[in-house]
Image (tube, rainbow, N blue to C red; front, side):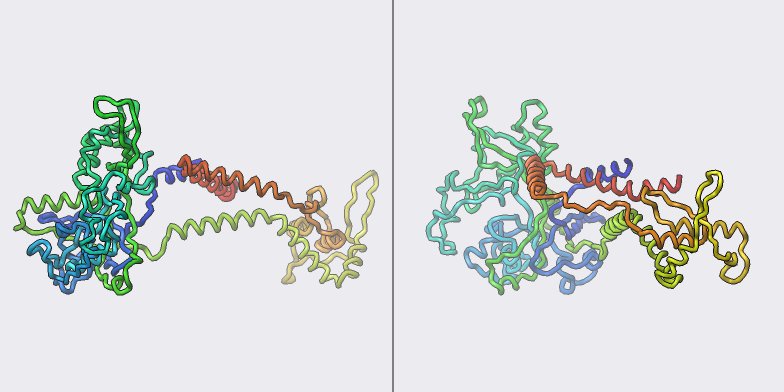
Length: 537
């Protein structure tokens, strides 16, 4: 029971992550000896990050000899290209270290913090490299979950003449809203925003529709977040329930609306908003880039979540405001997290499974080992007796005498008694002879038809003679039959499909883990613990 509770608690408490954050960003603040550490996920393109041994030394070498991602100054993109996508759209090939977008701002030895959205991750990295940056940190944002339908735009020639990025006549029908379960999950928190509050937000500004000023209405754990204020519930604890259930503390307007009876805070229409996902993601390659452009990306790229980005950007703004640009800057170092070459936990689990399976099969084959031992002894005795004829002769030399007065039958060996000596010629004591004969007869005698062993009082040859005249057969003589047919297979498919549908529809995946926990712990207790405790006590 203790083992079951331990396994159950481990499954309930341990969270599961979809993407492993294999990178670490150490942020060293001015005057603070201990860096702030952020976990990040790496990209599938560009160079790999250095190990921690090389990456945690922020200033031990010159900038020209430092590994990629080490000793960098965090910076933001140019104001006219906040997503680093205009370099692709307008076909502007900015030369390395020729940074004229923001006046005299330089991106040498810089790590650009760029929001997600508007174009692919690899295009952002390519644009950052062309600006002269040494690394790029892409972070999640609510704006990246929205887009505008530009299929009706004119002059779509891939240049600045494309009015998809300049027109101002978009309507709500042109908004591409976030996707359920991929970008948000209403089961983690849901709110219905009145129309007069919804109108304060802007989803129609080029190029992506969503503007950053919307964040003040959709982020936080106070009632400034409209999802906290208008959380869907019928009691007074709706606000606190949204804060506790929505881990990201952010919500997305889904584009779905409901019609109500109106009221003081609305005109009969309310807009749905749900808790936004904020997970680490994988920075995948852009298949639309040419091979030359893909090979051109030589700077490391990582991804951090919306919450991590908010913390990081607040630190940057605080340091810049306090120092007025004249103090020591923030320095960061990006490196790969140490990972063991051998997964010891997987080896232990594998070894435990193999051991339990071996022990179960060993115990289940106990009867077959007994039969095999009896057959082996019979073969050895027949070989010593000189074949089948000799075995029959020896067997017939042992006659059964009927005792007077109704006494029981016993086998008596009429051959001359052999010398009760050991193998080395020394005489064996009478007690030793009795013990040896009893053990030999017991081991040599297979179970009878009713499952009982018969102890023969003769010597080893008498026991073997009985074995020679008795065919050794397993206890179960019934003919094997196939108990499964097509109906069983069909029933299994129906039941399994129904169970999976129920588990996924009602999101009760942990039930399967609980079943596995009980099954595995029960098998371990039955096969290992119970026999062990039985032998000890």
